[in-house]
Length: 96
Image 1: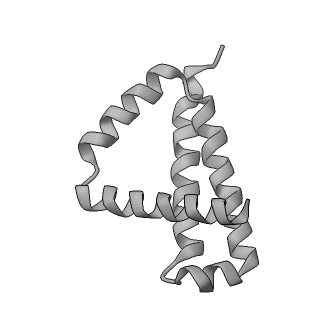
Image 2: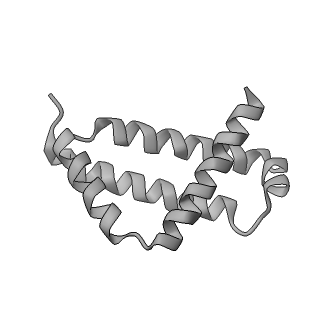
Image 3: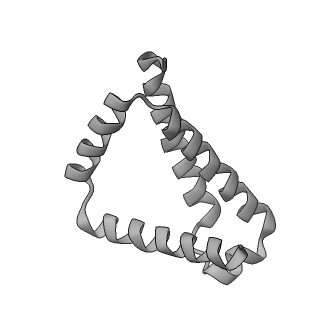
């Protein structure tokens, strides 16, 4: 059984990984970013951290946080997140 007391730490890990990804990506374009293999692999590593931490969240925390985020994130940010997600998906497809 997953321990709920660890959920705040897992959420903190997710937020730190997101911040780190934004630091590595910066204002660079896709070509410039992909040319920097160290940053590329660092971003992949942080995406793995996000996935592992999210997978370990208790169901009650996952549902609560999803509801909280969907009501607090500005629509412009959601658009950026969707575009970024689609770019990452496209990148993953091209590498497969």
